[in-house]
Image (cartoon, rainbow, N blue to C red; front, side, top):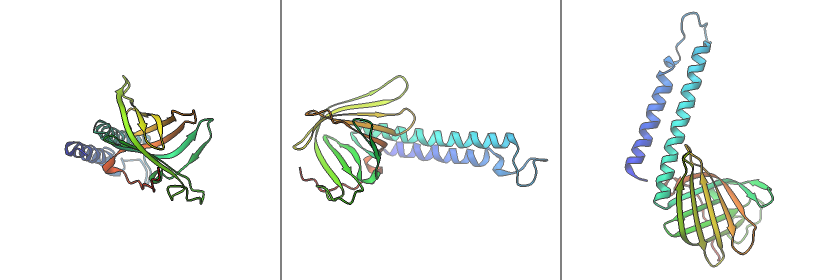
Length: 203
């Protein structure tokens, strides 16, 4: 990850933590508030500080993800897989992902069914050459990525959408030879921050 970006993230998180600690008076009670209780004003201030801390953390991760997209080095770790007709399953992020590393893309599925599958971890792992990569940001700050992935076992269009202000994203993979699209929903990280396990690639 870019050194300046890492430094910025650390600064944002540190300032947010300090604000959370000291912005609410370090948990001290005001006169008349009662032992072990907080006034409505104190509770509201605490909630506001917590909300601002979460927003700052989300924004820092968003900026890190945007930089990773620009560098074409990112991984979308999915915790939910959705199929064409709305059926979905919850999955393990470390083994279900869509990634891009320069001009190579990987799509991996791994279901906890006890079946080893071609990749040895309950599903399939395919990779291919990524081309026609297009990155756009709309007026609201949502980021989209379009690309084609061509390999011996995959020929598909991939569309990724990452929400503004966070690194939550969804990747829709649509094979060119049929309409059995699959959507991966989860969190997009720079490759250096990701912790995925790639199964055996047979194709």
